[in-house]
Image (tube, rainbow, N blue to C red):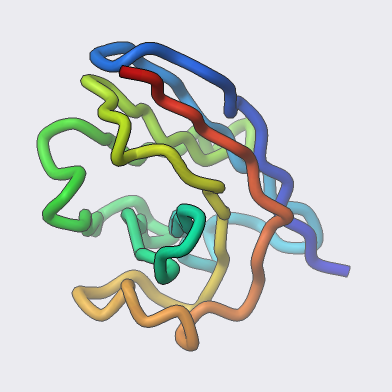
Length: 125
């Protein structure tokens, strides 16, 4: 059974940082791309970032470019989303997702096969 388990969410003041982690089970990261989506109350789900299984390709939403960084630790089979200079607009539930590839179309949720349960990120002003 494939599972994606997120951790690292929490509450932080604007300008602060958080690091989210995603630990896939049931598959190895080398075989899949991993991404992050988020959904704020009353808003549509938004693709945040993705990274290919090889780690060679990454994509980011314009709203987080320059502030968020996606990375992997293949030895730990863990994917990270480092979030810096957080803004209140970043407040959302963040979901780790797994799928066959990471491309410029990563923001289409239908392209992702597996979804985690989500972790809450709250940024206060």
